[in-house]
Image (cartoon, rainbow over all chains, first blue to last red; front, side, top):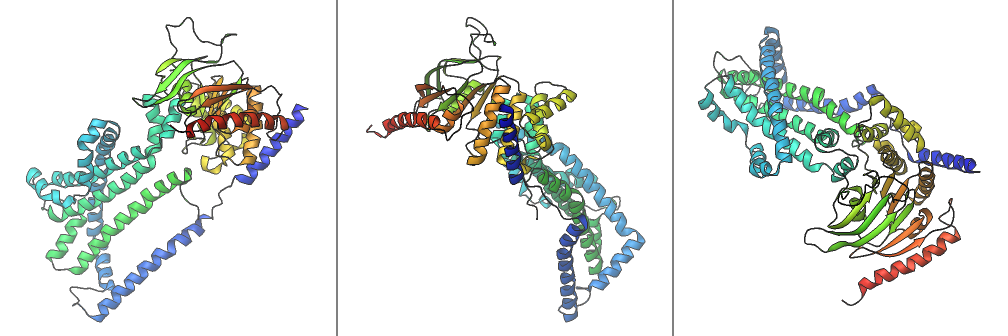
Length: 290
Length: 263
């Protein structure tokens, strides 16, 4: 009697589950790639077209506004001679290294500000204030303090990136639903166990967003620093290339430099941060499936 | 973890005769605020299913927090056999970065259960709540009812013998709730659980409980108790459940009316 009843309940439940659960169907990879690729491709095409038309209209002399083709030729030249590759590798190395150091400093700093109340009262406002300070403002100070060298460049990168990474952590900590922490306590997670199994995983998406922004800030700060901090002993970075273009009054070189900066920025974004963030959000069901 | 008063006569371990949960003169006030719970004394026998019923402001959830050890009483004593109790909330409160099985395993892990044992135990528990095949699913892929069943498996993983439930089915649709009532009664029997179940739904209380305790509001006090003598399986639609619900609802309304009067 009871088993019959229990079987009935089981099948009832199975029916409910089947009706209510929804599996996420995802389009094949090539299809998704195609649907996400064409709008930006079209936008770039239109921008190039607009540029060409502007060039042909003759609003500015050719030296001030080269055609897309002129810039393309310079770009190819720079690539062939290896100058661009060298500049990219110099800048990416500096940016990457600076970013890693910024992560190593910003992460514990964020944890400290997020979790320790006096620390938050003390330096929390300063930290968020620093985020709105353009890092180029640090360049003169860095040059006076460190002299014209790598140290000055790294100082500017760190001052730009550390606050946003730390702030990402802080806002992540603030957004952790109290319910999760309560559940952790009910399950017996105290102190370190609570941080490891509940707090840190809950903070992860905001932290990654902070890292993403931190990278953008290090890259930007680096360009500002490289533009100004240049000396023959320092290698040629993308920022240095821009400055050289200005000195030579070579607009095509300047454009090639800007494109280089842009491409690196977009590549890191698309290949590193975007996939990690998407994966994180999808696993938590925070990403609407198209 | 739970405040077992060491000055008291003995330990509160599960020995026959000693209740699974004992509240003696429990009073709770937050800071200088009003008294939320006033002198509540309640024994829940081992294996008993007690429903706490009351309107808003009766301190139901505060009371459960006290029993769960999340909060300490201002006065009085809370004793839980075995020292700790599992707690389920209105929201399933599953951790969204873990799969269903990992959520259950986390409870085991925090108790120091080894990896292999965790895997075996968590699949047994998911089996018990009939979610054998959903272990690998993420929280957002589960329906509300399935989430609460995972939460139940997770609570059972704490193996505390006492299950505290804070309006666990309030956010579910009526059909799912009905099925989960049946499920809870079945699991409680098979695991011989002691349950302290908070609700504001009179019929739900009568459908589930061996005893219904009516709390007054502001401050929360025990107003009245009703033994529910008819056998499980009950149905929420049955005339016995309805009849007792009418009586209790009338008393509950009388309690609420006291607050609307001139003050």
